[in-house]
Image (cartoon, helix red, strand yellow):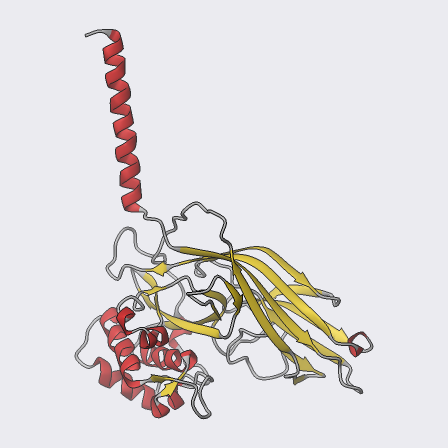
Length: 345
């Protein structure tokens, strides 16, 4: 055989090997759906009332961490008042902390927060595959919260709904299905929106906080670690505009798999996606914080925060509700390379 023929054959074989390798990599690590956008949030701070001395403000920042399934860049905070960025020690929630003293606060001002974020779909295989998820400390996520008990009515309900069911995934699915079947999503009357699990299972309606408080309480009562996450909801059918409301979801933990996301309230609204939202959440959200009963640092004088998605303030040591807020977004339409990330942890 001629030398040129041998060389051609070797080059062809090498090219085939590269193509097969790339195809194998593509099959092993498919591109994950993402959404990239610019987000702006503005807190409108009024003038300090006459006779007051000090206003303290904690402004939540987008969550950063291995469990967030989002990357944050170009964070910018604009304010005439100095601030520092701090982190809550239990859940890792981040925030900017401001202290406004008289006479500095005699005039109203704005705190403007802007950043770019890339949000990844979080989709978990419910069957263990590959190396097991690294061990995480889950004790906190088996205990009660102030509005999410794990005894009494909640424990009885969890026992009834999981009777005869074995395995944490099967039990979590029974609880998830029960919440969707028994609850109704609406904003009618009063009492909704606090994430009160007892109220939710009695009133049987409410918003995402109520749906997921009931799920978390029942899961913990059944011995399944579960945790709460909250942020802002992005319109799925719009590329820019105001953000109307917050949104929350939950995760439960299974040894060997890791944290598994669920979104019972979105599943209630989109019945064709009930199976999808058990083990997956979409890209139409930005996470700001994790957990309930949050103690900030420096510590607030008031009660632990029920949840933390909007600015919290105290005037002379007492909770202050005079700050208003608004948020808007714009999708980044520039072409981007498909992102590949690990899921399931």
